[in-house]
Image (cartoon, rainbow, N blue to C red; front, side):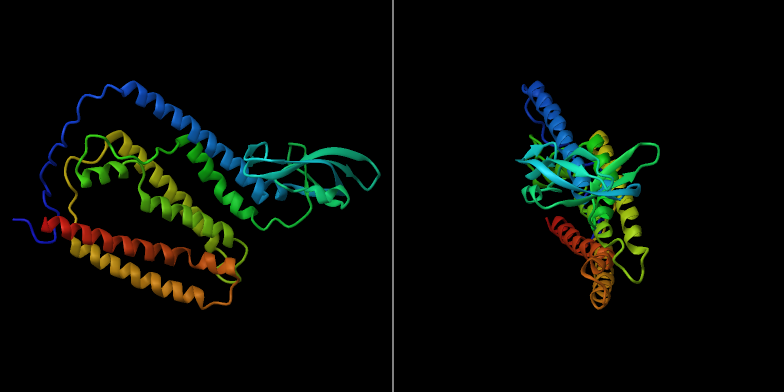
Length: 311
């Protein structure tokens, strides 16, 4: 006999879903799927290029060897898709003057130079790279370089793996079956947790006076969570869900959810009570907010289990 807090059908094969009528549009759907994956990978590659350019990851590579000034010769406002990536930016061709009086032509993207620099010189610096020449960048602080490096690996990974767009599978009129079909695309809780850890760690890197290791820990764990989620999503796409329902009880879900909510609340209050900067506080709240999110999710899942038991 099943207990009141156990999913119905545990230990028994799930009933076969209603058979959909023969699909005569299979070829068209395959073409649409391939086209969408090509488009998604192109957009992800453009997003990767834009993120690395905007955050200035290349502006901190190498040792500075020479400083000069740049004056814009010609500027164009480009977008939404250009050599500056996604978005609208100023793209300028400039003349750089070095201390010895020599000049050099150099393009600048991502609004590093604007039409104001037709008359106002912009300081630039030449950075020597290991065994790969040099790089000329604008000589100004790059506060988001750590975020760019944190996003580097995930964006490359998603560019190769791709993202399947959520959809409701045809032939599944049952609401629960539709929900499971959507979850085969991507585990949403894992997606949110992984990206949040990466972004919070990247923004908070270098902005903590205590627990300085925490942002890097969040970034590394975020990479691991996203990698695990991507692997799980690939397995779900290939194999689908098991034939038997996993053993899940509402009581255990509620206990774990309550524990996570308590830990998350205490951690969040502790993070907000510090004297750290806004970005440092953001890094401190990374793990407490994850605990709160999974605690709320646990309560939603336990509520759904109870409703299934009552059905």
